[in-house]
Length: 373
Image 1: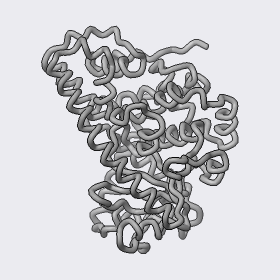
Image 2: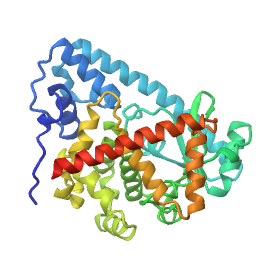
Image 3: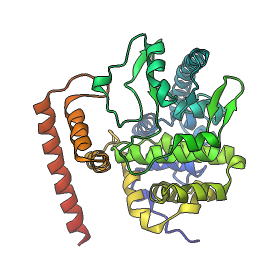
């Protein structure tokens, strides 16, 4: 199969290109003779995208100045300290919930740091995400937070309860993997049937193929909400590189097909293929996805890593996939009146921003259509 690789030079600065190629290809043809300003750009780009600890462990950084190597080392050590503390708290939470008869599954960074990355510092974490059975979610929240969850202010179609602080760590209790009202989802029960139990903590684990699929969809919908980080994309490469012996290609293909997940998987795997991340991702390479893949790559270099059009497109998808007029109105009411923590918002202020940003999205769509024409 021939790939029409996107010229990354047209997307990234030389400094950003050096970081991206060093991580995903394992080498870069960009000269490492960077100026002081260039090395600052490397550090800022790596920190902003959550890959500074990874970069520190690459032998290629020997070509960089001692000052930059020291700065990357500091980021590595900060990640090590923070992740170690979060893992201790995560272990405590798992034991506490298990003793109450509540089964726990670690998600995202909590899973990756424990079971995928050989060095816990390589994958920076900022919070803890756990999955429990829907019937146990409110009990788990009360047990850990010490107070009842405000059910009246919940997005009942969401996948998790409002986050809260537990011993200095931000905790998110999930009872689904994705919101009910989005197009592409993973059924938890199906994943559990193929999973197993970690004997050390007595927590449940999805198999490697399902974790790869979950994190692929998570990246896709995070992008659709308007934000991306290079580290989330690297997670997928790292799973394939280090857990590839546990990946059954045919099983993965069958799951993607039976769950109708071809579109998001093709987009993200095409992106990884263009970054030359390994042959596994070429399973779902699709040349027609290259243009959107290029748009995603551009987001990594933005200071905010955000795009208002994508964020509102995700919201519109949730509205569109909400069944029934009454439920649509209830969901819109929730969006206008509450934030994720259950705090009240100003209705008219939120309505103003919703109308203003919706008009921006419409104008963006019209301009994009005219450019194609």
